[in-house]
Length: 127
Image (cartoon, rainbow, N blue to C red; front, side, top):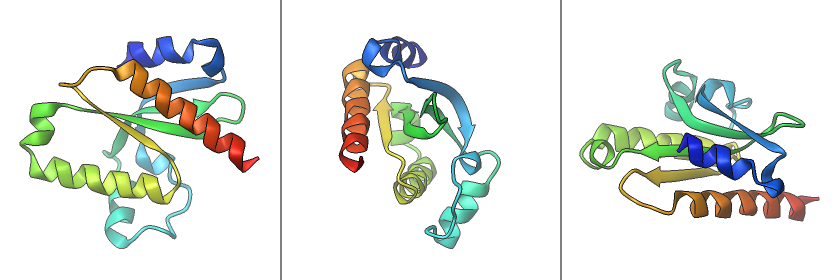
């Protein structure tokens, strides 16, 4: 997935973006007031991270989280599913889109392009 992200954001239309791996969730959440107690505890835990964070290189603002879900690990692990749901709620509440990619699926690049285009489109409609 790292290679897919690198090659995608190297395209001219996405060159204002950069990415980093394994970013702690607490470093992304600036305001915990919208989160409930469970979400706050989860987001502040030092081991909770996002797999990939794509951000705008000009202002360093996060624009998209990409999570890679191992099919077997996630499908057979109820606790992991619960943690994923909490992470998704936290990201939703702070207004940061998330793209989940399953390891047993294909079309990662087209899914990423679609998500980035949506971010750009949503940003343009706000201005």
